Length: 329
Image 1 (tube, rainbow, N blue to C red):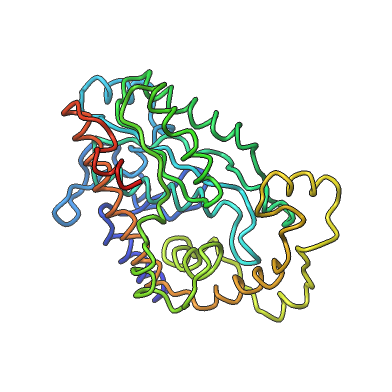
Image 2 (cartoon, rainbow, N blue to C red):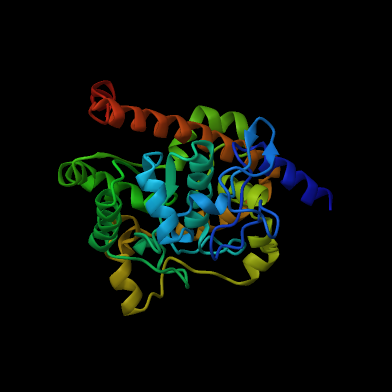
């Protein structure tokens, strides 16, 4: 019960209380039977907004049409992630669930200017295919999927678009095609990962781990502890060791084909992978609810600011990214 109370307090501390992602089992911020009106019960200085309202897929065509036609809807966020192993203790949709949560919180903070598009169902993760359960798209398939969704959003009249990613393997494929997306779409477009809001200097202040593993270690596990404790599973290092896991050899021909798609997982480059996998599992034991709260709040704050700037650039007819940012890349 104390953990429950702590979690509710954290969710209330976000720009708007967190809530369910369809099919994700996320805790509901809106009580059963809550009104779907734009303004509900007051919460702090900000009126309550039913968190489902900003999820595009949960709107009716009438609701979305009227939202667009009102001129209030300015931008859309497309969450991206992956279905992949997150060691022995986390559900495989971690990256999608967390990127969607952060996208949702950003949209709620800026309501009614931002809608959250349906999250990408899978991402680019061939290097995790040695771990059973992982599902990966080809790089070109992933890139084409995102562009197709962005094109639909543009066609409906949304002129500011952000892909907010939660999976490291998606970063390079997005960066590769982002310049082309901007040419093809002709609107304000950006693509970034929520963890770019966590520079190493910040992580050193927040984490217990000296050299953190972003995947399934203290960072992701802490965020799950804060927002999705029901998705975590019990584990012990004894159970991990007793499983005698091997991710360096003995691959089937089918798995070898997937591993060969990415240099990081090429069969010639997996030496040391068993030790790395165990380190991630061990690092997860250092996770804390409080750490997860800080990490989530930081990402939401950074991308609320990003979306405000992108919308302002669109409204002013200015290029995105700004020339100063281009020079830094």
